[in-house]
Amino acid sequence: MTARRAEGTGRTGAQGVDTAAPEGGTGAARDPISVEDPGDPRLGDYTGLTDVRLRRVREPAEGLFIAEGEKVIRRALAAGYEMRSMLLTPKWADAMRDVVAGTRAPVYSVGPEAAERVTGYHVHRGALASMRRKPLPDPADLLADARRVAVLEAVNDHTNIGALFRSAAALGMDAVLLSPDCADPLYRRSVKVSMGAVLQVPWTRLESWPGGIDVLREAGYVTAALALDENAVGLGEFAARRHPRTALILGSEGEGLRPSTVAAADVAVRIPMSAGVDSLNVAAAAAVAFYATGPAAV
Image (cartoon, rainbow, N blue to C red):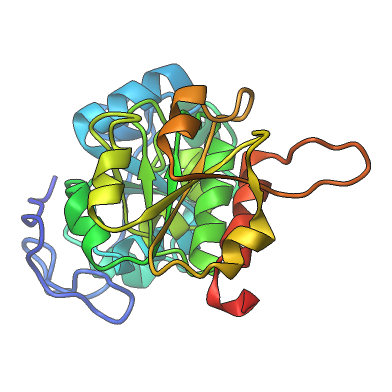
């Protein structure tokens, strides 16, 4: 296996790919390493990808995450994430040839059946990369230059996390903060659903919750809890106030925000509903709130 470059070193090309030559090479196109045994330890980063309980513990502990598909892999590289290794099925070798040529990380070629045995599912997109995580920023540092942020409490569905990050990117949110009990935004499903947006939108975890509301308040944010509260103001009314700094707090898929969180926030906000519907999915509610409080809604 080739040596990996240290975090933050090396040169990057137009696609964010390390253009330094692979160890012992010249940077010219090279062939992936063919692996036939699904039990080969070199493929260890990719084993059991469908085991959510295992992967959600293992990946943060080992400092890795899995990028799936050509677009997501390229976006991860463009965002400055370092590749640990890549796994390709043969038909994707040409599409990823520039990435293969531009990385020091080992690249493995496996047949579709072997890939399925390694990962636990049929790898439709034919390209997976194990990427090295970056240290999470301090919340105060992340908040210093932001104006609109989303704060998630106990959101644990990876699809919702991914959809929410995609809306945050599309609708101009500056950052996302997570309570300690939120799901991992870098879990494979979240990254895939977000189309790589979780790699672009700055995010971090708060050390405590709802104590983290104090961090937001100290940074000058008006904290708005989206909740079905009898004292809640309508989203349109809240958006019209045009607060210089706004933190939109969204709760878990089933229970919504905890009463203690609503009580700690500066204001409770609700999205008016019709046809007897009392609430929206958290990702859908987030998209509505992001748009309503953004510059495009003025």
